[in-house]
Image (cartoon, rainbow, N blue to C red; front, side, top):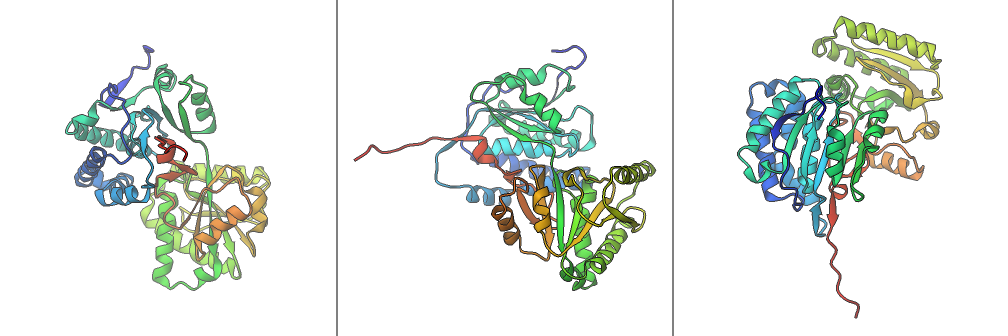
Length: 398
């Protein structure tokens, strides 16, 4: 172990029992349901929206629904020991990653972000408390913290039957380069971006309450993670007649929402303005920049930039483009694009659009307000399928 980067064990012990379990094992469901109950009842966690989202996700009713949806009649076992490297930009994702490994039937070593964070520290503490009551899982799961420059990732990779790697492209590439057993499976969640499509006539047809609900949903998709989540949209595409009027109406509602629910720090405002100037210098086809209160800035495009996937915002900086058709987007939607959120449009029709045009990007299509909703299919991966193996039994030929 590197002397300048000690390993800190936040919960559990170094896994001594890495034997695989069946997916959705009863003891795993009991543990996650218990964890959900503890987090929902924790006084500090009640004020952390992302923690409550995770707690709601792993409640018993949702776990039973997921189990039923993934019961395809095949015999499966987890792959063994899964090593997770969690992202720093979305702190609660370490807990989701642990849950994915558990539900697939794996033992787990989860590296949480090295910098202390209130969400990570609280959830890790509760995980440890609940693990202590589930001795059958305590010997198979652990949460650890250490500096990224240490040798611990190499040590854990050398033991892993699966690796779940979250981070930017360079981080994922560096982790993938670490030696692992020949049959180790890597699931990599690298740098992605997302966008939103709004049907302009549908927005214009909303009453005041409906407009507020739309603004609330978009706010949750973006501001809750400061647009850091891969599934948070950075660009809004307005489709159909009345796009300009619909945009003015929507951004105005979002500005009112952000004014009360997003206390923007001065440094964030400065950084956002710097990002705006950089977009101009980069030659984006910007015709105008509008502000809707202090927390919403929108760059209006006359067309699509040459590198759409590189156009990203933070702290309430968005781009928008008005169009009569989605066809011009097709050449731009490469593998960097993860989620398409939409309003006033059929999600199945948009998913069919992705398939029909054989796009290398867009792995999920969801309504506005559901961008951050985690599932067992993420980034195009069926996580239960990736983190488990099929035990195939065939009768002899007649």
